Length: 367
Image (tube, rainbow, N blue to C red):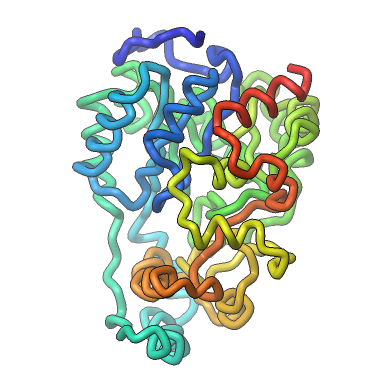
């Protein structure tokens, strides 16, 4: 059995990938797929489950933490989206300001009308209760807090570390990896273009590269030989795990391969789409949220990918009601179907328990 960790650790003894029996991270898939049950299953298998708090406020994050603690004594973490008003504003200004969101909304009207909903006006900026969430995580610590979409300030890192929490930063390149280390991150999640869902660029307007997971791991390991990190992106088989570990990663992060586990909160529509042969490509697109995120190419992606401005979180808020209405109606051509490049290889593990997948992928890789 995996070592049971106390709720508050000695601040000098923060959790690293090497402390896990199996250094496998369950990706923090915000919006439903990552449930407390999935987090507990990954933890019980010797890995680390992560709450995706990106779209939760502080109160809802506290509730998720409490639910996970009811299910398991294994370590787990919380992922926080770093959303910055100035960065979002700069990206929007680069495409003509709020009018770009209005023009995109006008293009979406036929889809909204078909679904029987009315799109709201230009959404206001929100940071999803970021400051209160961080304060809650300092007041009631968890073993790990990770960050997506940005590099936290050094004082945020220090506040978490002082209560025994390991700080992880999701990075997409060597430059961001160096910046994360400079602010004191304990370890990194190195995420390539092959990852499903959002790419963790540190600026909304940034155009992500197309570097593979293995190549990115090699580059980061060469630049930072002593920094612990896990690899994320398109990892769906034992061979994938072996390849990134050989390239220099200390562990892996799994997302898409866990979407069809019994413990995941993936909707029936989404589960079926991942197995549907009509979908033959996954592609990074801004069309749902304004940030690049890799999804299966359905009708919505094909039609609106080229039209979407870099407007986050504005497009996330704008398209949210439409995405929900389509999912409720069983319309697979509209909602986001987040999927990494290895989603087809993940068919092998469909409907299997998460703990089995974690164990098999790591153990069969020869680690």
